[in-house]
Amino acid sequence: MNNQGKWNRREFIVKPILWAGTASVLAKTDLLLASPSLETSASPVLQRTLGKTGLSLPVVSMGVMNADVPGLLRRAYELGIRHFDTAAGYQNGRNEEMVGRVIKEMGVREKVVIATKQPSRNHSQSAAEAKVRFIEGVEGSLKRLQMDHVDILYHHAVDSVEDARAEGPLEALQSLKKDGKTRFIGLSTHKTVDVLSEAIRLNLFDVGLVMLNYTMAHDAGMLSTIERAAKSGMGIVAMKTQAGGTVKPDAKLPKELPTVSQTALLKWALNHEFVTTAIPGFSTYEHLEQDCSVARNLAYTHEEERFLADKAFAAKAEFCQQCGECRKDCPRQVDIPVLMRSHMYAVQYRNIGMAREMLASATPGRGLEACGACESCLVTCRNTVQIGRKIAQLKALPVAQLLT
Ligand code: SF4
Ligand code: SF4
Image 1 (cartoon, rainbow, N blue to C red):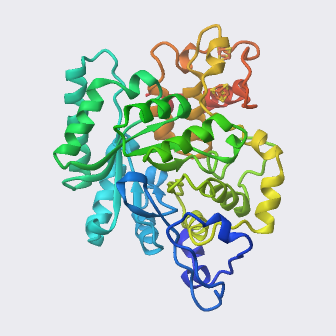
Image 2 (image 1 turned 180 degrees about the horizontal axis):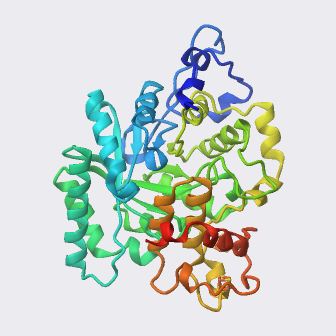
Image 3 (image 1 turned 30 degrees about the horizontal axis):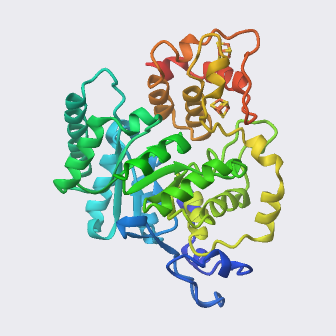
């Protein structure tokens, strides 16, 4: 079925929006909506400033990772999205190529903010070598994007304090900024507290890309760290806001979550004023429409309030927060956080390519092959993730596809 067929622009524009409680939510946004009368006019998209970069961005951006349809980017632009987030590794570079091609065809380069990411995973390199490789990687990205610069360049997947302060990538980022290859530099991380704290201390990064979703609502330490980073001047971009997407592997949840949960989850993340924008990774026109509806009004509907009041969701979502605690309890020290992310990409994002790349990034000798499939998995998760079941599901997927 053609998803585009489900989309009706007029329906979207005149969709009723509830206003209860909006003013307090929007107190610190750049734009306070003016009129509740939406019968005939659309509300403007909410904008916020990305920390010290000064960039003004709509609160909803596009994580392009899961999208392989150029029309989706075009429609996102038409709906007011101006920030597109890609990475060198997504779809082996084809994701950057698609972003570059669409932006060029549309002739809107000056009107959009393009972010890409470069990893530095080879720890055996010297600092000088790592710097050279990082710069070469970014030059490859610019070529694929057909751009002479990007707006935000992230050091990708910085998951330890040591990686955050690694000399090679840091020097490369600063040199690329000085040479005008990127306007701003940042880091993306799944280890928010440790890495963001180090980033605050280093005071070199303009932007932080961090996980934030409702399953983390109880994590005061993480929330206060992100807030502290924002107060230090870093612009905060939120990812994984919908806790892994619309498809849930848990039998206790409907296979496709209803719209209300997706919009409630996105609003929950954006109702944190320290977040400038979120990058949901929609891959259909239907999900694009849902996410864009949020960009005009962050007040919860009654149904969304009811959804968020169901505390059981956080447990059912089984979202792996990448804390790494489980790894210590595994007799083979399997890189379980990597396996859990690979599972999310394969099962929830339905992105086998990303799942394969994620598996390949596991610590050598501690990937899926190292898992001894104990009679029952010996580790337990502090966040209710059913590790053993997910590993079994991962193994049951076409392994040749995942591991080659
Ligand atoms: S599975 Fe659980 S314990 Fe392991 S890294 Fe994820 S959240 Fe942490
Ligand atoms: S089944 Fe669980 S405890 Fe056993 S090796 Fe695999 S991850 Fe470790």
